[in-house]
Image (cartoon, rainbow, N blue to C red; front, side, top):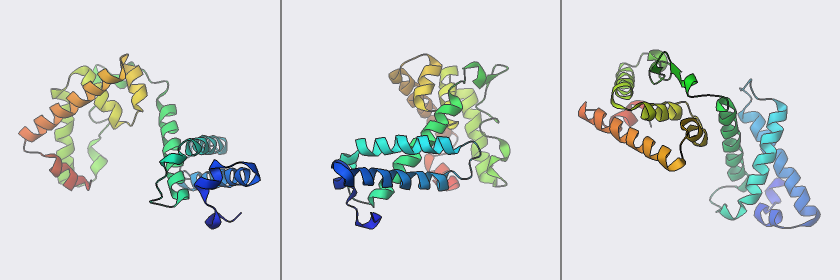
Length: 203
C-alpha cells in the first residue's frame, strides 16, 4: 500500500483487508512521526511512544468527520498525535502534584521559579516586561487566582488545575478569566499593552 495512493478517510471508514492495512500503515506513520518529534525527550520510552501512537490512532478514527482536506490527511493526523502525546506527558508530569507543592514558604511560585530573571537572556525589554508581570501576579491577584495563573504558566492540564483547586470547571474558568483581566488592567496602568508583549516576544 503506497501512502500517496491512499484515500485515507474513505479507506478508514471502510472494512475488510484494505481497511486493516490502512489502519496498520497509519499507526506506523504516527509512531515514526512521534519518534522523530520526541527524540530529544529522555523521559519518553519506546513503550510510551507505542501507547501514544495507539491512542492517537483511535482519536484520528473517531474524528474522521472533522478532516476538512485543507492539508494532507497524514499531516492532520500527525498534529493529533503530537497533541495527544504532549497532553499525556503534561498530565503525567502533574498527576501527583498537590497545592502545597505549588507553594513554598507561603510564597506562590509565580515569581522566579516560574519566570526566572535569566529566562529572557540579555534582552533588557523582555526582562523588564517579565519583572512587571511577576510583580503584578504577586501583588494584584488573590491566592487562588495566582495558583491558576501559575498552573497555566507551568502548562498543567486544565482538568488537573480544577482538581487541584477542588472546584469545578466553570469556577476555575472564572478564576482564570478574572486573573487575566486583573493582570491586563494593571499592566495597562503601567503603560504595558498586550501589543507590547506580543512585539517583545514575537507572539
